[in-house]
Length: 564
View 1: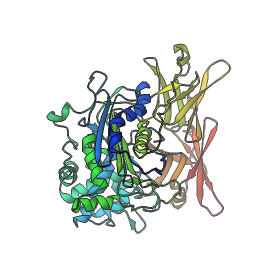
View 2 (view 1 turned 180 degrees about the horizontal axis):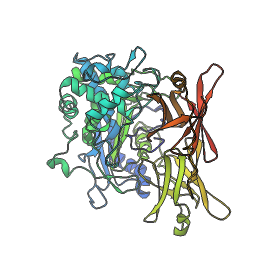
View 3 (view 1 turned 135 degrees about the vertical axis):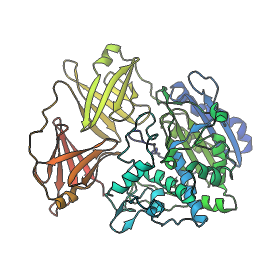
View 4 (view 1 turned 45 degrees about the vertical axis):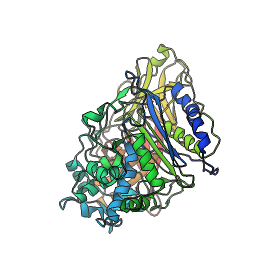
């Protein structure tokens, strides 16, 4: 994920190619559970999951293993018929729905997406390049990860009150900052929009489309969005990464991005159909979605099918995370293997487990993971870390002690538990990140440093009176045409971007997951906030092109390079 947020997650996996292509033989089946148990045990020992079901597909056979419990109060062990939210793994289903509509002759991959919107809704475009349906499926639409007009009434169910009218309002007013097809950038919005458009074209709901085109033909009887009374007892309650109960998520208009609920038994049927597509139109659609449609643009990119991510050895995968669940689908045709893993705990840590299981059944030697165990920190030592630490305008870390646990939340995101490596160095079990608290000679904490993806970011503690804001400073006028050279996206850290837009002759700047704020000109390149004591300086080269910006706040400068 890289940064934890209210978005539906995508994992960043490092795969080892399956160079050993011998698969488990029938004689190995009796030991498969034992070998899988050894790989799972560290996750159980460290309370990293509440409940989990794993499905394995190899040599035409299926095995299903359950672990943990349905919830802290329900000791039932999850099984192949336990229902979970699968989050962004829904996107591979949406990709097949797109391919199916193409096979049925209802749409074309290169069809402008705006043609499927109501006539009064404007689809964003850049120059004469329209966003196509394939662009939406392969994350090159230029649309942001999430729309900026999401204002959840309940942050524990953040998509529930985002409806058609909200989506249409966003599209009609949004200006693309890049030409579609020029950059791969993961977009829940794009995939959710795609599911919505396909539903409109079919005069159906997204749920009915999934059921009629995929679930019924493949006999996936428990794959659905709406949980009826009969199925309610099979729905595993969700939990946060630190084991607290979590609400279920509802995605009325963006269901194609992550709204599906399913079981391991159903997803094994889905995996089997992707290994050997049926000889019919659905099989043609599965094959079309499986095919790579988007080649890498930058070195960090991977090839993309319709919804699928593809690694060099040919493994197709997608994971997903909602507020209380995590899922992973891995399928490799060369070794005729597949792994389905779903847990009712919102933690990306299990992606590595799923990958290890795939390697194991493909013949590779895999050892159980060693997981770092935290040290105990006295309660009085925790209290000196409590406070608010400002990372950027509108982005503040809130550090609290709850029931003896140190919890850290970033503005607009849920608080997550961190664990002690020492009294001042803490780590997350959900993402590969550490927080270091800087104490002065008197033992007072004055700042924290987030270290993630090789990048350090300092957040200074907010204490005493707020710095004086430049409310009385009069901004200068900057020609509208001069604003355009600043418009774009600037990467502060992996997954953390400043989005700069010109709206109604105003320059607006938003940080990933945070609202946009207007900035005001001190000069053509130096701009200041009125909501916080901070400035933004745009670095312009001799040709008048802006290649980066510098945030100056609390005496600290942070560089963000423009994404091309």
